[in-house]
Image 1 (tube, helix red, strand yellow):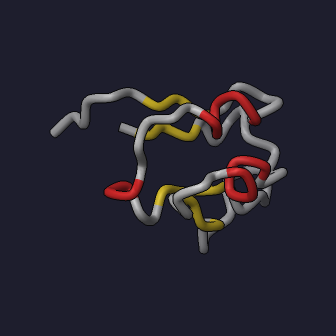
Image 2: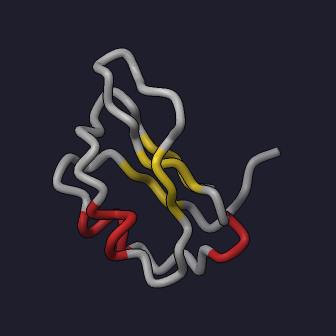
Image 3: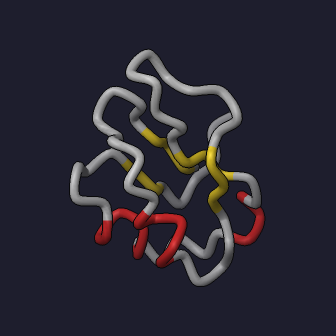
Length: 69
């Protein structure tokens, strides 16, 4: 499961740029701060490598190996 904390994210899109599996896209709707945060568009491509969490300067992304239903 991929979680992007909209309160912490500043929209730098480093996660999007460094993801080797093209998991993220910019959200179409801005958050309360007017930022288009990244959102997972291709969750099935995620290999849980954790690169997005390492690159996020705001620690706004969490990747778990289990999807919650």
